Image 1 (cartoon, rainbow, N blue to C red):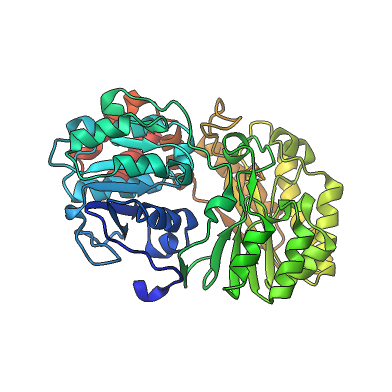
Image 2: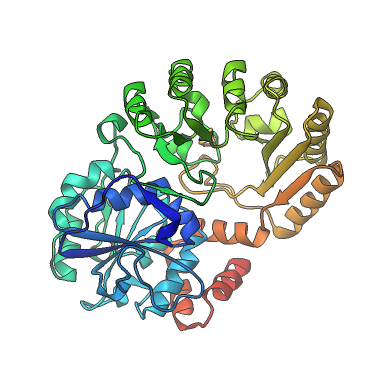
Length: 463
Ligand code: SF4
């Protein structure tokens, strides 16, 4: 596996407290996840920690680190970097295969500390209160001085007590809840750059540089718009120093075009002659210059429109007018893009048949504008905790299937469309929204079962 990555920074693994950093999904996803790679780097900066990376594969029974092939059983802390609800199924499988009880109250001194951190720990998920020994909430960078004091060889109970003193930690078995989120106010101080380049994923062969954390927008369905405020940006000076040493970068941001000094950034990237990739873009921030610059580096670009109806975009607080959208489409054609990918969402209670059919109108319009390849990624709304939609529920499968039929019937034949799996989305919703009582019952059932997936799916369908 390591052959698929190039290290740009030497990570010294020297400490005597063994911490397994686990990405609960495939290596390709782990290698290209900046948060995971940064956590590996930062944890190894702590005086007593020796942190090695693990990932999940369905075929694994024993789990060995990518770094030294050491079995996971030798590690005292199993730290799961948790970004997507559905990965929790893999976490349960790993714990079951290693005979670690799923409920924290059933673990004893001989078991590892099961720790959770990452994007989903910016909110409070009741399931984690039953599953996790420790939950760390917020940005890892500003946790480091206190983690340095806590992460030292000690018994399981001593470690739990020490975590319990941290304001940003939840330790359910001690009844200790977080008092705050850890917040990294200054990206410049840490310069979030990946210590390695991975040959897989959206940013394959690119050095990942986080130029924005949080988001300036307020979309009603998104945690970022509510919990990760204010947005913070890496300065041009710091980006310039990264570009001096690397010739291919992936810019990580909620939306690169929100970067406050975008023109200066483009100047810098052009002068440095680096190859650049960016992820999905907001349509209200695209300029002619930015799109022309991007076209030299990417053959297609991706935008999140979310709804073809302005009325529904207002419900979603997407803040995108028809004029802004049309301008962005026109500018991207003028920049000579012939391939576009557009994200849509469906499954709002306010949605009408006409709103759904309008997706087809957008697709037809893109073909008429001259795009040769039009890809649509269409996902059901999964209302989540920590968002403005947390009081909403996900629509029933029968209704969602009808809506998918209406959307499909509206689309021109030449459009490539991908609908997110409804089963997958239902499990995501279920894991995000279950309460602690249900979590208790679920984990007891999964503990007895041969197939966590089937149990979770059955319970999700029943509630
Ligand atoms: S959906 Fe995108 S633009 Fe909207 S708040 Fe979330 S990260 Fe920001």
